[in-house]
Structures are given as C-alpha cells and as structure tokens.
Length: 160
Image (cartoon, rainbow, N blue to C red; front, side, top):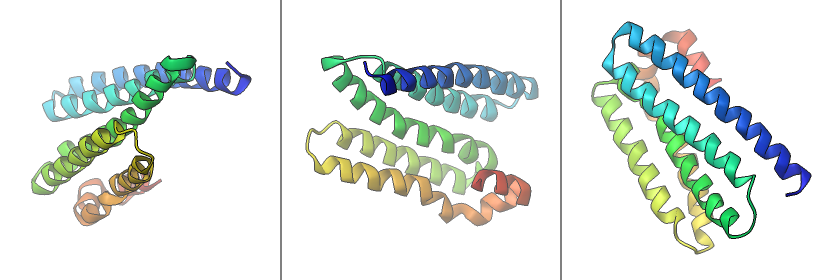
C-alpha cells in the first residue's frame, strides 16, 4: 500500500469512528424525545454514514482482488449514504406527501444506481455520476416546503 492509500485508510477510519459516535449521540437525543420518526430516520442515516466510512477504510487498506471488490462496495455505499442523508429530512422535516414522495424517488434512484453500478461496462461510470448529481440536486423540487419546515436558519445549514 502506497503512502497516499495508508493516509486515506487512516482518515476514513477516523471518519468511521466519528460517524459511530455521532450516530449514537443522535439516537440518544432522538430517543429522549421519543419520536419514532426521528429514531428510525436517524438510525438509517447513522448506519449509512458508518457503512460508507467503514467500507472506504477497507477499500483503502487492501490490495489485489479484494481491492476491486471493495471499490465496487465503496461506490455502492455512496448511493446508500446520499439516500440515508435525505431520510431524516423526508421522514421528519417534510413527512407528508412531499416527504414520502422525495423519500421514494431518492431511494429508488439509489437502487437504480446500485444496480447499474454492478455492471462491468465503462458507461456505467458516466451514469453513476449523473445519478449522483440528480440525487444531490433533487431536493430543489421541495425547496418551498423544506424552507417552511426548517426555517431560514435551518435551511441555510442544509444548503451549506
């Protein structure tokens, strides 16, 4: 493993540990509030965040055939994290028709992206980038209800 990969492995391991600590903290706070929507959505978010950093740590730590497999899993976990990041906003902040619609579209795109990512063809990489971008920007369709739900300050944090 060359120096850059070792550094990547260590930084992603730190990310995995911090993701675990953050997820536990979020779940404790959600549990104290007793809101099952928060508990479930933050569990999904925390799990996908820990999964991405854990897989990425392994990807940057191995060689040979294992690296090829871990690279594929690393790319798959990106879709899961994007969808997992939307989940609290969909199920807690928006919840109603906007929330459920956005939730379904984002998780549907994640599934489509993961299925096409498994394909060995080179054009799959271009499609991946397109799906990542669409998933990232699709929130714009719900700007008005999100702004109403989060307020100006909350929306500014989301946009940052």
